[in-house]
Image 1 (cartoon, rainbow, N blue to C red):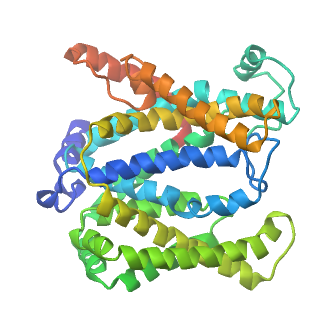
Image 2: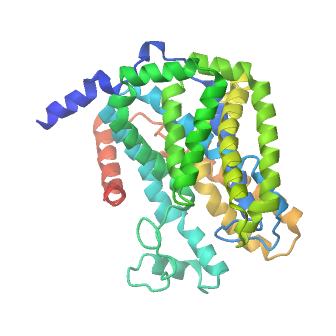
Image 3: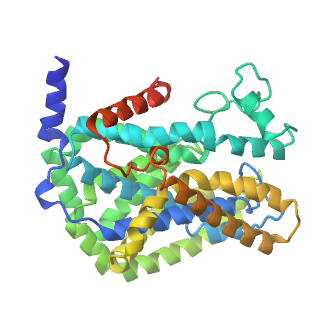
Length: 426
């Protein structure tokens, strides 16, 4: 019976994109945008070390309120753009492999790095956070002994996580992408149905103002009704679905290409209006004071509009200017996951000890940026050359191993991620 179900899921066209015959060639602009967006993510986390009013695991002694306005030019659309590219990538993968293989490969590629990350990469971040807060005064070896000791009481104020005091931190993207991939698989019969195909075709052919307005209303509604601080999850899934549904729509991309200037103008105007409201009114909320409800709602609406226009603008820029081949593309594309996994730990370790030297904000920030880039790429050079380490950073093994060896490797990977899978599901 089980084999019958597997055969159905493997062969059924219900779980395949409806337009495989029209599958485009590899989208170089999306590869470049993925690199750019994860680069912005690294800069964002360096910025979080210096902003005055936003929480982070540890902070520099030099903090700047003006930096928040600069970061807010990117912050609304940075992750939604990553999600929409992730949705497009899923469509490419599902066109090539069975649904069973998709789920199994997705689980290993995402959860093996996540498991490695939460037990090896993330703990130094908690060590720095607790040290900076004055909650511990011990060396890292003593900390790790306590970290893996269920009887330890030093984490009483740090219980949030997948397991108590064991959290994903910046690796939440891997966890969410795994969840979203499963949700999307469940929805595939609907997403590939004739009704949804007709709706996405209609949306693709509709006037841009209508489509953009609809997206802004959807995002704004989520921000209004969802739990504060948790909106990134439904908004992420929304943009991933948009990527899956609209990623191959040639009309959609043609409109983006033709409307680069209007998108740019609209984004600049909306951004300036939001930044005025943020600095005059919204900062008061962050500082614990109340503001008139109308300005709070207007701020959320403008932020929603920035998300939508920002995503469309960055996709348009990529489509117009980043469709070139380069020998560097493969290298940087492979570096994305390792640098993403490593960077926040490097930032916090270097930043925490660096800021104690009192070098001045500008010099400290410059050294932190350079150190983060150098250390991350140095570690990547090691990772990419050691085959056994590559899967723990989301990379395929380079050598061609015998079938039995590959099977044993898959079994070992499944065993390693099984506790995490059970914890995430149940």
